[in-house]
Image (tube, rainbow, N blue to C red):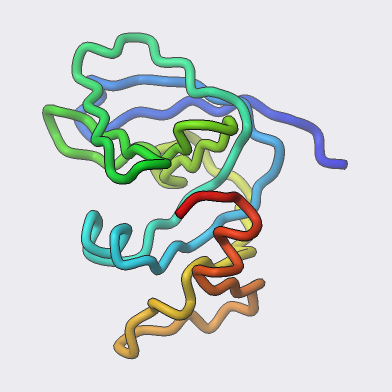
Length: 140
């Protein structure tokens, strides 16, 4: 089992600062239509069951994106910070808002059945359809 480690992160303008405990260094790409609409491409994230600890939530905005999840971003610069389930303690943090170089490993791709034909990653990863993602995490 991997050793948990602490990471800090910020938005682009540094108005939102936080820290989080992570269990692993696996990066996931989500190709769902909502993630692609939100960021004009797949969301690249690292997941954790630990809550995000914010230093100051003054400029943190949270969008209620579905019945089961919400998305957080900086109200000043718009940086996408996280996706989290409303129940169950699942937090998915945008990997590149985390400070410091890590040996991240691109490990999974979610909603491959919604991935558009105009891009494809060359990395070998586990690939899950939307149905498989909901079976693993619940929702919908």
